[in-house]
Image (cartoon, rainbow, N blue to C red):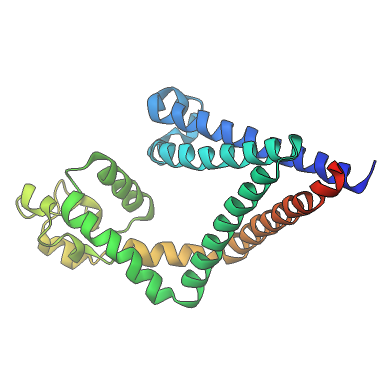
Length: 241
């Protein structure tokens, strides 16, 4: 088997795995979003954390769709020997790779800047959508309950919010360390529950080696995919001729 044919077969197998993985994620995401209760029944003792799985349903669909697209481009491009599809596959992977590198640079080198970006999204969501938008409310409730935190920074994120007005001056129960049925501004101030961002950042720092290893592995696979697709692209004319 020539080098070109070997690379072609590896490209087919690799992208077939990506395609099947994408289909699996899409199917799982649809299942979780449409019928989360039956999905959670399979988790047994882990079903107490069910809300987390329901929240990621749409995320799984989005990621799965991107993987399906990448897999189709790679399989069709290598099997049909289409330079257009191979180039499109290379561009898609390159865009994803650049976005990941940019996000990593922002998160690692400019943590304060990253915090500002997250705050620009989180604070308006807590002020205007928490308590009225079911998806936003569910995501924040799950996060605050699991991490035992309150808001993005602390309880002050809810001051003057739509939720505070709806509940006549009360805050989410996660903002108070007491087990009372309500959480007033005074109780939240006395409890001084830590914000979620600091806890998430501490968790990421604690597992930095694992996160870095996974990120490096994904980056290596993306670079390999780009190299292989460009190799096939550059050698197609010689092979056809």
